[in-house]
Length: 77
Image (cartoon, rainbow, N blue to C red):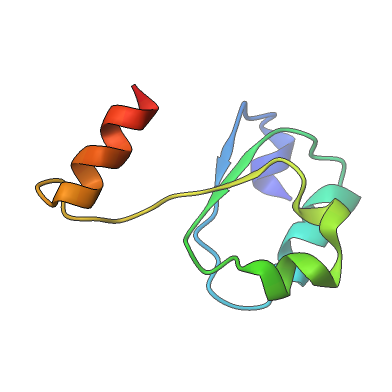
């Protein structure tokens, strides 16, 4: 509630449990901006209520020197 009161452009919330409840509450409180979370969000969680997870982005932790990470970086760029 305090974070939303500050009217942020984006919220970083690496939530690890009760994802649906957390994001549902953020939406019910009126926050419409993007939220970045950890990589715990998965298809099972999204299927519980897809509308709640609209505008949610995930961070991804990876060793930047692996070939897969370099490939992902190249695609992104």
